[in-house]
Image (tube, rainbow, N blue to C red; front, side, top):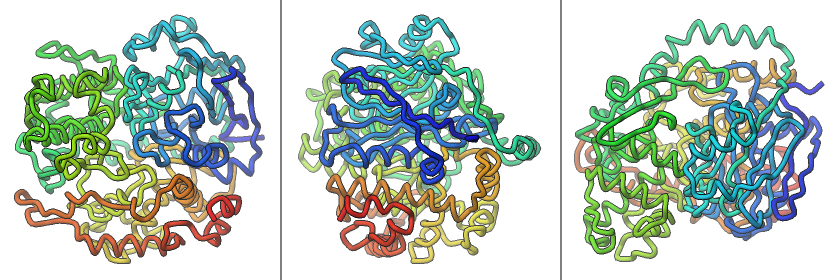
Amino acid sequence: MAYGYRGKVLRVDLSSGRIWVESPDQLFYRTYFGGRNVIAYYLLRELPPGADPLGEENVLVFAPGVLTGAPFAGSGRNSVGARSPLTGAYGDGEAGGFWGAELKRAGYDAIVITGKASTPVYLAVCDEWVELRDATSLSGRPTAEVQAEIKRQLGDDRVRVAQCGPAGERLVRYACVTHDLRHFAGRCGMGAVMGAKNLRAVAVRGSGTVEVSDPDRLGELRRWLQEHLEELAGGLRDKGTAGIVMGLNAAGGLPTRNFRQGSFEDAEQISGETLRDTLLVGRESCFACPIRCKRVVELAEPYRVDPVYGGPEYETIAALGSTCGVGDLRAIAKANELCAAYGLDTISCGVTIGFAMECFENGILREQDTDGLVLRFGNAEAMVKLVEMIGRREGIGDLLAEGVKRAASQLGHDAEKLAIHVKGQEVPMHEPRLKHALGLGYAVSPTGADHCHNMHDTIYAKEGRSLDQLKSLGILEPLPADDLSPRKVRMFKAVTRMRHLYNCLVVCYFVPWSFEQTVDLVRAVTGWNSTISELLDVGERAIQMTRCFNVLHGFGPADDYLNPRFFEAFTDGPLAGKAVDRRALEEAKRTYYGMMGWQDDGKPRPEKLWELGLDWLVEKIS
C-alpha cells in the first residue's frame, strides 16, 4: 500500500483540452519526494531549451510533496514551478494554506499543465471528476471575486482555489499564484505563466485521505510539538513573521531605501508589535498547524483594507515599508491587500518601487514619466498608487511590471546600478552585509535571489538550538556571520541541502521540527526506512537538477553574482563600514563549486549526477 503519496499525476494539455492520469511507481516518489524535484523532473524531461517562458511550450507544474496532507503541523504546503518569465531560469514558489493538502485528498500528487487555452479557462478537480471550464467572465476581476464565483459555480464553499489574478493575466513578470486569497507562491512569476496559458485558476476539492504508515508515531510527534509550542513558536504566534523587524533593525540588517541603509528610523512603527497592537483582527493557520502565524488585518481609514485578504508578513512589511522608506503601517496594509487582489509578489513589487524611487531621486525618472507621482522615499500614497499601476500595467506601472532588470535596461542613465536583483529576480528582505553566506546563497540560487532555500548566518554564529541541529550533519562549531571561509561554505552546503529538501517534502520552515524529527516524520508517514543521509541526497538532487536546467537554458558562472551594492559599505547604522568582500565571495563561490562537484564552467560533473541517481541527465548537459 502507498503511504504519503497517492500514486497519480494529473496531466492537462490546454491546447487540445486533453486530460489524463499517469501513475509513477514507488521508485519515482522515493527518488524525488515531490515539490521542487518533481517540478525540475518534468521541466527537464519535457521543456525544450530556449522555450519562451510566456509561450505555449512552457510546462507549469503544481507539486505537493510526500508529506503534504498528512496530519501534522507544516504539511500544508505545495510548490508551483515553470521556466521563470522574470529570470529565464528555473522558477518556482511555495505556498502554505490548504490547497496542497486538498489536492492530495483529491487523489493527486501533482498537476502537470502544458499548452495554451484559446480562451480563458479554469481547471476544476473534484476527485476523479476533472474538467476545464470557461473563465471568460472571470477575466480582469480581483482574486476575491473570482474565488467566490468559482465556489458558487461548483456549488461547494470548501473548494480550494489557486489563481493568477489580474496581474498574471496582464503578464506582470512577478505575478504570483494566490492560494485561497492569503497564501502565495510568490516568487519567479508563476502567475504570469498561468496568465500566458489563459489559465485563470485551478480549483480542487477532495473527499479522500492521505494514509500514513505509523499513525502512533505521528501522534507522538504532534504531542511533542503541542507541549513545546509556546516555548519554540510562541513569538511567531504572537507577532507573526513581522516579529523580526526590530531585531534586524537593531543588527543593521533591515533593508532600507533600496538597500542603501540597514536600519530604518521608523522601524518601530511597522514592527510586528505595532501590527499586533493596532491593525490585527485575527490569527489564522495552515492545514493541521496549531501555530497560527498568519495575520488578518482590517482598516476603515485612511484606506479601506478588507480582512478577506489576510495581512502582511515580514517580507511584505520590509519590501513595501522600509525598502521604500515608508513608515506608515496603514499604507503597507493597503498595498498588501492590493498585491493579494491583483496577484503580485510583494517582494518584487516593493523592491521595484524602491528602485523607481531611487531613480526619481537621481533624476532618471521625472514627474512627466510618473504620471505626476512624486516618487520620493517615504511617500506612502505614491507607493500605494504604484502597486495599482503595476497590477494594471498603467503608465509607469507598465515599465515597472517588467521587474528592475528590464526596467533599468530600458531607462539607461546608470539605472542598472540601482536595480537590486540576482539573475533578474529582486533581492528579498535579508541583508548580505549582515549575513555573508546569505550573499553566496543569493549568487548561486537557481531561482535568482531567494531567502528560503538559503542560509541565515546569524542563527549559526553562536551555540543554540539551530547549531545543535547542524551537529547531526557534522557541523560542530559556530562561525561568525561575516565569515566566508571554506568552513563556512561547508556549513552553507549542509544547511542548503536541508532547505532544498524542505521544498521537496514540501514542509514549512517555521514549524520547529529538528532534522531528526523530520526523518521521523518521513518514516512515520511513508513507512520508508529513511535516514538523514538519504534526505540530504534528496535535497541535493534539487540543487543539481535545477542547476542542470539552468545550464541547458544558457546560464553559467557569470550569472552566479551578487549585486554590486552589497560590496559597498554602509555609511551609518550598526553595520557602518561593513560590506561583503568581493574577492572572498568569489573564492567562496569557487569552493562551493568544488564541494558540489561542478566544473569551472558551472556544469555538474557526470560523476556527481551518477552518485545521486541522476545519470539520465549526463548526456543532456554534456
